Length: 271
Picture 1 (spheres, one colour):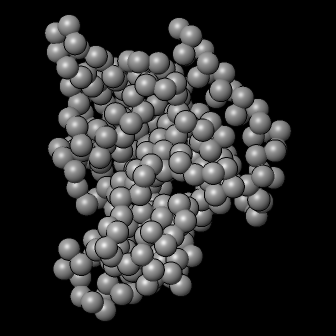
Picture 2: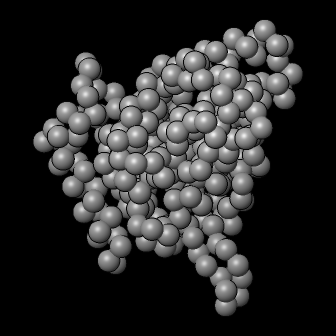
């Protein structure tokens, strides 16, 4: 029976993504660096899992093992019961810097994935319009990336991932380079997309406030080698009724949870 802090769910049949005893070590011999150790974490389809922890604790390594960019040194990672053995179309990845083709328009960037998959022009056009409208970029479909603001470029990067209809969206500090106001707006837009699509999301972030606001679950990791300190259910992502992000973030319950997570990170960094 797993303990309360290892991140695994205790109810059978819910597991969609599973990390089972995952460890990752870089290098060998005297240069050996353990990045992750004994990570066991399960979550269900539709969950929005946010991972936080001290700098260098292995958050990005965790995401890359799920993306299939690296193979764990020990343990297994699986999606829907199938082991991850490399990158795949079932996972969409969004990085801190948007990976856009500067020679393609907004519409061309959004439709690139469906084009590679061989979708018909009509189906591709419908998919692109739907997603660009969702993130408020439809009227910019004929513009080029250099004509967009940083926030708009990141919205387009999210669309680039979503049009491929992945089972899970993996995001590594996607709003880290944005100013505070744009970051708040992007959090709202990501919430809207998540609610409309019901997609599973794994978000890596240094912002505790962002994690508590966006996540259905907040996973706190220790300093290197990264281990799971605690997994905390956050109630704000699935809150009922409409409330602005600033109203939510000023709620006493929100402040208390944010401070609890911050305290766990401080404690893990000092041990």
